Amino acid sequence: MTPTTQKRILLVGATGMVGGYALRYALQNATVGSVTAIGRRKLGISHPKLQEVLHRDFADCSSLSQVLSGKDAAVFCLGAYTGSASDAELRRITVDYTIEFARVLHGSSPNAAFSFLSGSGADPAAKSRIAFARYKGEAENALIAAGFPSVYVFRPAYIYPVEPRKEPNFSYRLLRAIYPAFQLLFPNQVIRADDLARAMVDVAVQGTDRGGKVFENREIRAIVKRIHPSTG
Figure 1 (spheres, rainbow, N blue to C red):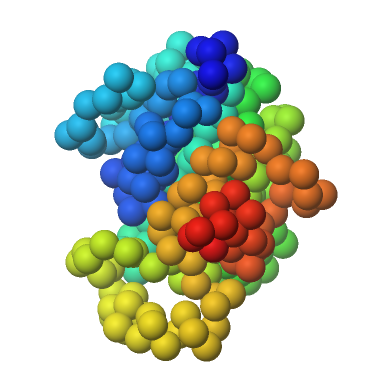
Figure 2 (figure 1 turned 60 degrees about the vertical axis):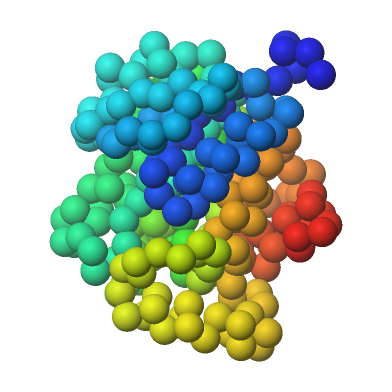
């Protein structure tokens, strides 16, 4: 594969669980020529493909216009857990930061594909009583209307961490404890974090031949199985 066929991708949220797997997978992926990781904290790694850009305030991404120029795809994994942030902060991170980043990216790389980490239950009508669902739906609507040729919305259900971590709340601790049985009984309500990350990168880089571009958990699992049969 020649360098001209390789994709130049952006990754936001690489210090998070899904974003971290997306970063590792993208750096190993032969179809990816370069990865620009934008975040508020240093990653602590180096790689020939990796360019790391520290950006503290996602409420204003204007200074990133040059960094975002000439990119083929973006994988956006920035977010916050419900209960770990106030309602105002949750909306700011989920909606405002996404819209602001998309605004600057579209001005710099209008033909970029955009993979967005949403969540199961996201409500585009913004009528849900659950704040997370309303805000994710609002962000989805804004991205779809932003003018990119391809926006891919991923709505995972329970994301299994794969590697041990400090769980953000009791619900996550419980789900991790019962994961083997939960996966067996409700396979389409769970997705491994590394599988989700692979799907987000692959679809951003390669596109998809299916009609819709909103992927519920069952469809994410199908993507993983199709592209990586041994892990599906």
